[in-house]
Structure formats: C-alpha cells, structure tokens
Image (cartoon, rainbow, N blue to C red; front, side):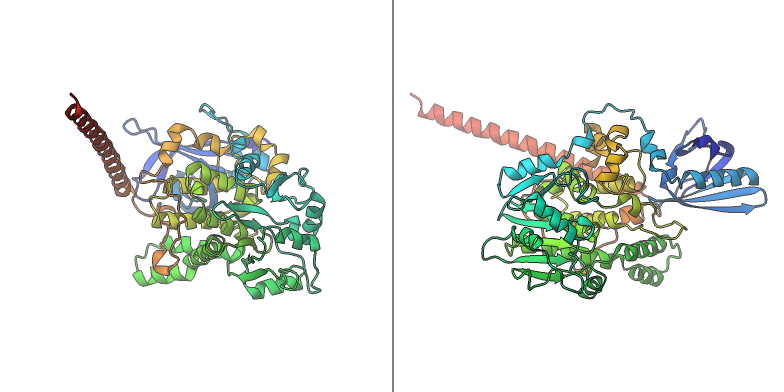
Length: 551
C-alpha cells in the first residue's frame, strides 16, 4: 500500500494552529505518510510542529460556514486545534489523518522508515541482554542457571528465549510446569536479593481448576527457592473472590495442601479494563476548565486513579518487606502474569535495589521486567484516554507503573539518578515513537518482525552523552539502602507533569527548574573549592610539623 493513496490533500495554506497558553499561529499544514507538519512561515518567528500520526488518539471535525476546524487529541494527552479554510479541504485532511493514524499493519509504522540523524554509539538492542544479568547473578550465587528451554518460543510464546531458573530443576520439568501454568508462564527468577539470598519469582496462575489439579514439578520448582526450614510468600495480585472465580474457569491458585511452606496473600490490583476507565475519567477531570473546587475534587476521587496507585505501591512494599525484613522468598502472579505481576515485581526492585534507581539500571529493569517479560505493549498502548473506538485490550498499565516510580522519586528526591523528564519520555515512547523498542507484544513478535535489524532502539538514542544529560537528576547521591515509600493517602499526589502539563503554562516552572539546577551546580563548585582548600590546609599543617621536627 502506498501512503499517497491515503493522503487526499497533502498541503493546506492559511491554516491557524491553536494550543493552550500559546498565541494562535498561521501557517502551512503538510501531511506525509507518518507526520502532520505545521510550519508558521513567519520571518520573525519560524515555528514548526511535527506530530506523528501514531500519536493521534482521536480527531473531531467542526464547521462554521466554509471554515472547518479539526480538534486533534493525542496519546500524550495534548489537544491541538487546526482552523482550515474550505470545507472540502478540511474534510479531506481529516479523513487522511484518520486513515494514517489507524494503520493496522505494524510494518507500516514509522520505526520501520525512521533513519537516525545521529551517530549511533551503541546498539540499544544488545545493551541489556539476559546473559549480562546472569553474569552479575553468578558472581554472588551458583544456585541458578540460564535455561534455553524456550529458544523457539515453543514452551511459552510470551517469554523470551532465555530465562533464569533454579539449577535443581531441569528443562523437562520446566516443560511440564509450563502446561500447568496459564499461557505456559512457569515461575522464573525476577530478582535476587544479595543481602540475604532471597529470591522473587513471577509466573501466571496455576491451572488447578475445581478438581484441585496438581503438578509435582511445579511444587518442586517453587520450593527450590526456599531455604531449609523457611517459609515463602505467594503474592496473588487478585482479590480472593476473583481468584476463586478463576478456579471455576480452569485457573486458580496454589493450594496449601500441596504448597505447605508457602503462605498466600491476596492483594487487590485492578485488571486492565478497570484501569482504562479510571484513566479516561482522570484525564476528563484534568481537562475540566470549570475551576470549581468541589467538582474537581469529586471528579478526581471518582476516577479512583490515586487508589490504584496506593494499592499497587502497597503490594510492591509487601513483596519488598517479605524479602528484606522477613527473609523469605516470594512468588508473584495474578491471572496471565503480564500486567499487575510485572508492576509489583518491578516496583519491589525499585524499593530494594539501588541499581534500579540509576538510569541504565532502570532501563535494564524496563527491558527485563516489561519487554522481555511479555507485557503486551502493542495492545495496551494502542489507544490512550481520548479514543472514540470501543475499548479492547487498552490500559495504562505501564503508565501506572511509571507514576508509582514518580511517587517514590518524589519522596526520595536524592536517591534516583534520573529525573521526571526521563519517566515522561518513556510514557510518550510507549504510546508513539520513531523507535522500535515498544512495538510488538512480546519477544516472539519482535523476532518475527525483525525489529533489531529493521528499527532503531530507543536506548541507542537515550544513552548518548548529550541526551543523557537532559535526564540526569542534579540532586542524585547514590544511596545503597532499601527505600520504604509512604503509601498513606496524604503522601500521594497527582502527577502534574503528565496530567496537567498541557493544561497550564509551564514557563515559570521551567525557569524555576533552571534556577534550581544552577544553584545545585554552583553549590557543587563551592564544595569542590572547600575540599581543595581543606586539602591545601592539611598539606601546609603537615609541612609545618615536619619543619618543627627538623634539625
């Protein structure tokens, strides 16, 4: 298919662009296969807007006489308005944008056509391989092995080719366990706590059903993480009633009689369809310009968004507490093991592991616990909060995780190497990007699409020194301790950087941030001078003592 077939009017002049807190700008609008481009053409102040069609969530057409207006709502939550003279021109442009923003084929998306204008210093596709993680693990313990049981994606289509499992369990046993777990997602290592040797594993639900089916290989695999005489905890991200309903449909949970050393704890983390409804309500509340305090607070509460944040952080803190304070191993799962499970395991690592609070460590966490672990990004991020089409599999699961990281970041501002802009960048690229990193639903799909060969990785761009500097937190001081966030309602705030950034002017905030960075930089320079003078003084005192002791 040629993109030209979808573009009925490639260019329109005298178009007026409206954005909140910006002056209206007149210019030329151009449509290409992947971008909507607006250029002001003003000699005194040339302004350009490049918008990926894949970033467009919905469009609305309005007409007053012969003047047409298109309102574009984007997946990154901004809203722009284009006034286009001529009804036919406006209709053509609107239908072209609708067609180009809803392409079915993944291979027609921009990452397959994007060619970087920067020098590629590292291949982001090979920056965070599981072999490297296993090498780090092997330096502290020899109880685990790297298994190739899924090398053809034949055992579990949503797992990567390599997984880390207990050394005492062979591949034949893993195949049997895969038949006992939904979607073949048998328990694999998520995190090893060096401090006390405890492990966190993740999986999908066991297929026990109403007959209480069991699998001895599964019991052996789960028990392989336990120290003699110690108990473990199964953190089921579903309420008990939901888990019991799942058992009636062939799913279920680990029964005490077959897993006597494990204590099961049920948490209430909502499924993806509930999260999407909450997301839509929250964005609607944030866009309500009525400025009525009661209305704002009631809409914010009705969205339940902060409740989801609280529940998720509570579950992650529980997992971290079991590992660090109780000295127990943990198994985390919900139903499929691709959404709430990954939220809990990755947030627990943010709490426990200082490496995950560095830029590269956090990137490795996203790759390991989200991309390789089979979170279905293509399905979950197909639409954002504005789409008019019926919801299928969309949900802000990854955004909710990023917001929880932001909440912890806000409580521990000196413990993270990256800043808020880095988290917002990941949110934006998960929904629309020139990079192939978040395309596909799992590693199997990415391999079939040949993404590493045909597209550029986001990490190749982010990890260039000139880009990295934009995402560094000037307050960062490495903290090797476990950090325990407060989950009290008073401690949680709305993430304004995502939900309100297009609804208010950011000029003063940006100026304040620049001033803060300047003060921190100046403080570091003064601190360096103080340290140098102290060294100089110490040397002078030493020289003085030597002279006094001399002949």
